Image (cartoon, rainbow, N blue to C red; front, side):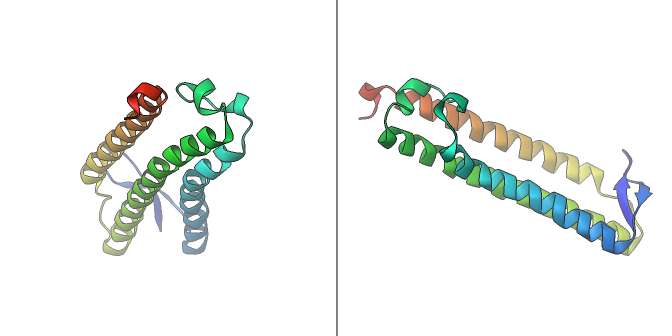
Amino acid sequence: MASHFGAGGRPNDYMSKVPFFWFLAVSAGGSIALVFAAATTLKRLPARWISIPNRDYWLATDERREVAMNRIAAPMAWIGLLTAALLAVAVEFTIKANLQGTNFANDVFIVMMVGYLLLVTAITIWMIRDLARLANPSDET
């Protein structure tokens, strides 16, 4: 089955079905798991390894650290959901191209990829600004 497609959407690499679906499960599942595990892993890291706005404020006490980690976890969950959706679309287009013997829908996928990147960028900027803004106690009201 076609497993890789060139710029025009034409298949240019093939795999048998079983290795294809194993590769898909490991790579897509692993990518999604990494995004969702990042917030949990961040909670366990030493403070010196964490780079967030106003790190000294957020990591000064256990209570503030927990607030900061929770404020990071929610946007990371959205990024994980968006990543899963993008991968699901890629899998759908790949399977559809294989079943119908057509080209991969590159034009549609590129639009979706740009949308994904814009949303992930917006979420990341919002998260950074949120942590920067809330670190000033006078802004918490």
